[in-house]
Length: 254
Image 1 (cartoon, rainbow, N blue to C red):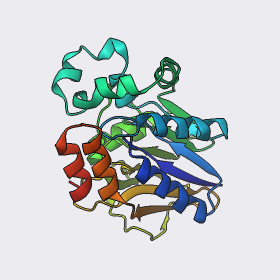
Image 2: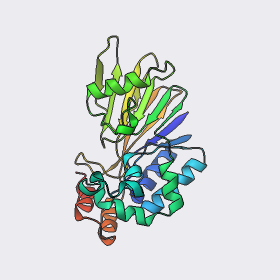
Image 3: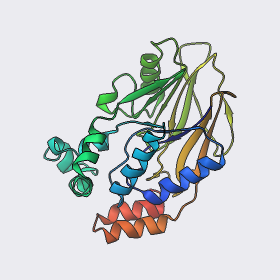
């Protein structure tokens, strides 16, 4: 089974469609969207509609912190008023129908399929939206997931970076630096945790969209970078009247 692993789309329809098209050419069988469908970008309605279609076709769609942020009960919180995400939360809320907002609100925080656990942030406390951005947090997440002995792989997003950690013969996690397009052997006798990067808002100085493909039969994980019309996506942010910062971030990848 080949899984396309997408996260942090952030209302960027241009990037989402580019990644889905790329994934189709990789021969993927299943799509998993690991949260943060909305926020920052200009196409929340279209992205949510596309993700609903993915779910209806048998794909996995999870809830991220931005799905929580746009709900009515969160809009007046300190998080909404002070965070970067809060700058687009009310606008995003208004673009979506009540039915779409409800669908986002009831999405699961995690999903398991065979030896794979999918989560937006950290598996030890997914509702706290902790960033898996170093070996210590990765170990906490992996340990929590692998309390279920069937789980050998944890896939998440949230940090907008592509990373891979594994547990070798000892307890300490080892970090592995992926290269885009190069399959990485991930044998099942070890435990693995990966962040698949951001489809819709890369932050590493490279504007190309990020996603990954996991081949569970071959036990290989491939991180991808996909070129898309990021300048058009940035123009759409400006045309929608959203903060200039988010348009510039797409243009520069920072």
